[in-house]
Image 1 (cartoon, rainbow, N blue to C red):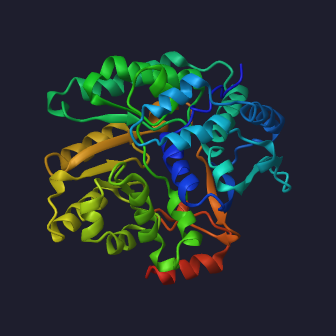
Image 2 (cartoon, rainbow, N blue to C red; image 1 turned 180 degrees about the vertical axis):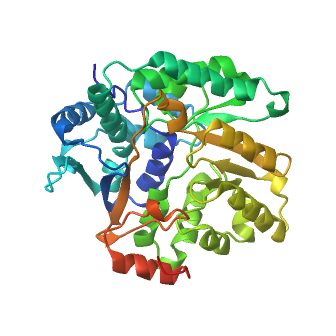
Length: 394
């Protein structure tokens, strides 16, 4: 059984960004690179299996029912769906090899037009995960997974004080397997009821009549470092182009591409009013929430009208703690990924595919978690820090 069988088996924000690329940056050329942050993981023995799965991915096309579903999403435009009807992923843009160091690691590089490579990241990560766990955990303890899932659901559902807490599934890229991911989503839908907000996965949203969720990812604002008129204005340029495309819809701004200080400097009164809220994805979430609320208040914007989205390494107890801290002070949303879709008593992989170049120029994220920075050009990182008035790296 092949791992990815539908091009919709990815996160919604890949499509929302892809639509912006089609309409505003159709000629952009990019490069992405894979990294496994978990030490000592040997993926090289599975290179051929990964290649076979990716080759199958590149044979897939959007079906008519899938295209019809995308047309029902209010923010997806008809010409974009027409483009997707012709679209397919191509092997020529991706390479998978054992690392030359011989340490068991692998190298995955995606390089080509942004419009034709943007959809690789999520399914390729899901493929690497599932291939690895198929080989290393041939007899997984799904009973333990179910026990853990039911316990998490009970923490929310059984507490009347959490009636307004809503969590979403953000776990496609690091899931244990496709079938387990679907079981988790069905369990959340059936047991959590109104506490389940939806899923980032478009395929399961369509199959199970669940709300698909997502706006922008780091790669979008990173690419704007090369696509905007001036590096210092790249964050505001990215927000402006997003607003030009969506006219007030999909209004959650990602806040950690340059860290919270740089975000708040750029997120002025105009953006405070224009966007519906912001998403946290690195650094201390409690500090982040306090600073975002204070920023809204200093700009004479009522934070209770805005949404704070938390999505960084979340688990249910942390989501509950954040809810209790910020309840009634702002609208809240929680996206939980790996802790929902890869929690069977086995350590999950910490793997990523990040954009490292756009139009031949290095691009990078300078988040509030330094270990998340991924760029092989130290001079560019230093320059980026200088431009955005950030302290030098340790």
